[in-house]
Image (tube, rainbow, N blue to C red):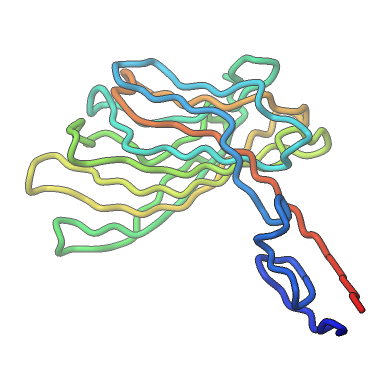
Length: 221
């Protein structure tokens, strides 16, 4: 008996009525874990290098439960080329978002620099108390790091609790971006570090983002 020739979309895959996307391994978009660094004691920096390849066009680093060793520094980002941090003053960055202060006041916050910074700023900043019940979380996307015709950019999404006492805190949700404008050479990695002091603890995971759209037309009779 002839099967139905009705088609449907499932997880971005076009199939006929007799197949589900779950049957087609590897046909949807994937976040593939490439490396993990788990900080449990005071550490100067966290770097991922040598993981960029033609397999993935874009990458993400997810930071979970990150705390500074002291409350006097800012978390910073540097991009890497040829297995070394780029430390020249060729970065620019900015961002903004919403904050809620002590559950009462709220408003807009922003950060950034117009040009000539030696790293990309984030919102883990002075005043963050390094205690285990308040966490800093962030997602950083690195776009086309192996391209050789464009300057390199990242975007970041940040969730931060800045606390100076048990009853004085700001809950902040921020989005931002950063640009490295020294040349268009390919990147080899990314580094996270504090502007002053060390990273006390936290989990850092690097993912490759793999997108595939597979069109399957099964005209079974």
